[in-house]
Structures are given as structure tokens and as C-alpha cells.
Length: 196
Image 1: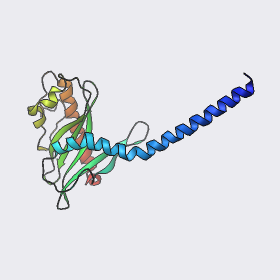
Image 2: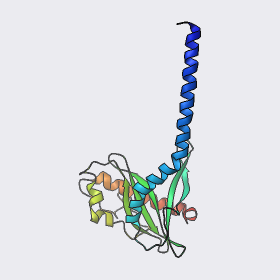
Image 3: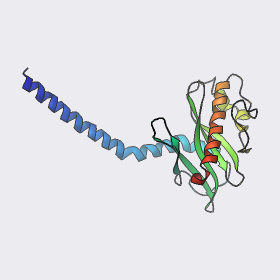
Image 4: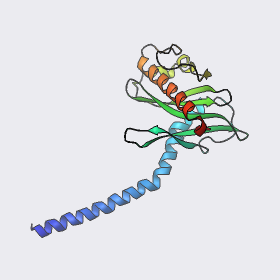
């Protein structure tokens, strides 16, 4: 094989991979909104419905908006989707997701804030990687999950704060849920104007 044939082969492969890479990028861009909608519909919407404890007459998924809550270590904005629940056009509650570290990784918690009362409405788990039958017993324990209902936003719900009892055998998971809820409350307090 001559040097000329090698150069031609490299050039042809470069062009072919460039074309296919470009096409894949276009497909990703074209389907990004649909992928995001499917994530919301299949993961966040069921948790939002469980966490919303008030009557509402709108579609919080359609009325969602995105807020920036900070930046990551690379300086990129960290965004959260906020789901407003309205009654007669007035926001009565908002739902959004927060995260706390459990035993196996981050636990996603959908929490709702009752706007008029300025209280935590309820919570529901969106995502986790906890061990089934061990860590997940915290999510299935109604006594544990109900500890977060209708709490004042000034209550310290973080682990060790004395206001949340962990589930025996699932302490790390319980702490992860409590961290996520406390983080969500702090996000709401800090970004209340953007959220509402």
C-alpha cells in the first residue's frame, strides 16, 4: 500500500465519520425536546402527582418552567424544572426535584411547597440507586415518608436535626431523603421570586 492510498483511505474515513457524526448530532438536537418530555412524563410526573396534596385545575407539566439555581464546578448553570399547581389561575403549590446522597448514590426527591401556607406539602421519590429490600425500605415506610408532610419551611429536616427519625437498617437512605428535602427547601427560599 502506497502513502497516497493510505492518505486517500484516511481522508475517506474522516469524511464518512464526519458526515455520520454530524447526522447523529442533528438527530440528538431534533429529538432533545421529546426525550426531555418523556423523562418528565415517565419519571417526574408520577412523583409530582403523589406529592401534590392540593386541588389544582391546570397541567403542572405543561406549565412548567426552568430556573437556574447555581453553577457546577465547570461554571455551567444548574437548572431545575418547577411545576406550578394552579387553581383559578393562582399558584397554590409548586413542585420541583432536589437530590441528596444515599448509600449507593443520589436520591431524587420531588417535593411540593404549599405557597399560601409557606409549608412543605409532601414528598415522593423520583430516582435512586439504593439496594432493593434494604435501602428502599425507607421509601416504602409510610411513617418515615409522612414525617415530611405539612412541615414549616423553618423546620430543620436535615439528618441530625432532630426532627426526622431515620428508618432502622436504611439510615443512609433516610439521611439522603432528608438531605434532599432540606436542599429543596433551601432552593425554594433562595429562588422564591424566580419560582413564583
